[in-house]
Image (cartoon, rainbow, N blue to C red; front, side, top):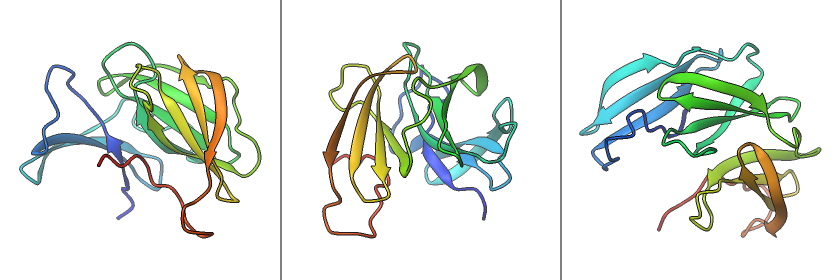
Length: 167
């Protein structure tokens, strides 16, 4: 309890992610960060990320994805006040951290997922407004290069997007 899973985290870029061998990132309610390897449905190894927590526990993981040209997953953060930041990772180790540009999506917007919508290597941040409207920011190295609204919730109010779904 207290350790929600946040996306697939590729710790070793040389190993392919198979359905029976994956890595996941976790954030504890106190802000602590860990990564676990899962093989054959069993957690086989869990290690702390370095640093093992953000400096302020009001930062929550909003998504994980490739935000630069290396092969490591990066961690996207959203503060309680809406501010967005990124940790560029090298495996389990923080390489660089900075606030995104722009640093805030606006009142009522929460980041929900990181996707590569057109498979061009550029990440897109998926946002959802408190009204249900969805928006996309196309990113390049931590800077928004375009933005657009994409949809409203498909089935009425009360629904929140949880992330990409590969069919």
